[in-house]
Image (cartoon, rainbow, N blue to C red):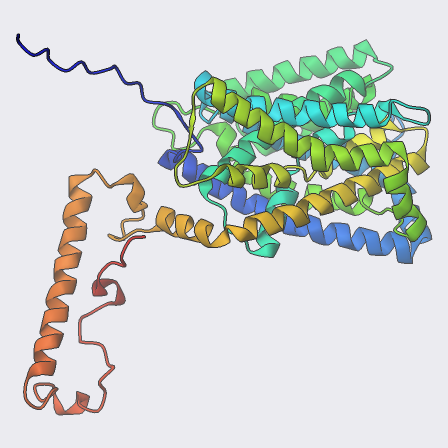
Length: 495
């Protein structure tokens, strides 16, 4: 009887979770996160200054917050400095968030439904579970369910600031996941603010703001340039949105989403990416730290800290950030990976995802904003909510630091592998491993290094050791050979 040929089962390649980014995406993520990291450090410093100022000179701090500037007519812009920071400076932050979101949808991780499903599910679960935890904690007598949205937001700048301070290396795939998660998180937060924290809508002002947005889009699409035109138009749109009763930061998001973030023709960068490159340092380095200076000044005392853990509203915020965010993001990612049959990058472990989930529990900028919006008629409760945001974020930062430090050596090795450039062409080697030209360049460098080592060994084996050297160099055994360069010593051994 003839033997049957072996039957090969069809194989399907499973999609990888936290896989290597494309080179353009990695470059964009690196540049964006570098700015956010610097901004995060400034954010931490501004928060510390605010806490010291509010507790050492509380009267002076409150006087600065209440100082009013701006015209009262025609759009009631006579606002306190606190309101200008909350409604004005944060509009710049949300403008950048709108550009990020648009870019993610047209050129980033969210452009493909199969790639977007994991961070989107993680972000949605990371918003829903903190809200549920807060609602459960405030379901009894004395609860304040209006604050359910406070623990739902992730602050990417604060998280990166923590990483910068503790010196933790984090592979680009984990950083990209954290950034994409925060972008989707910001979108949800914007929708929450627009839907649940807007009141007394004035439709005439809203209609004029919408007309301004249409003009903004039309001029941008026509290729009109000039900050002297768009900045005044953006301010008018913002003022009309503020007057309409819809939270003014929505104007920033809307303008960011209207920018074109795909390249046309021979463009090296799209207009949206160019504008983001210009505005992001202003957002991360000025707008958000100044907002933190005005928003993070809460009273720190024994009774105040005790209230954070004994009263329903602040306790719900702490539990929402620490437990809700962590379990929501980690659990959502695990479930999404299981049902989409995605495999985790073999260089990483699920423990790494858990540590990033804890880090994402740091909610600061948007959480502080929602704390004021959720309790507008109770400043004392809003202050306790802010204290809870600070405490919950601090706990998440400390726990995430410990978890990440346990794997920091492995992260450092991964980062070195990602950045290694043996042929010095400015492109990391991991993106050229299959390129014959790169292989030839590396082989040539290795051959030169081997020949140099052989010549050195032969010279040392000759009688008299270094007798063939010029007399002036015999007393300088460590002097480099003429015409050599440190880069010619050969590549380092890959990990």
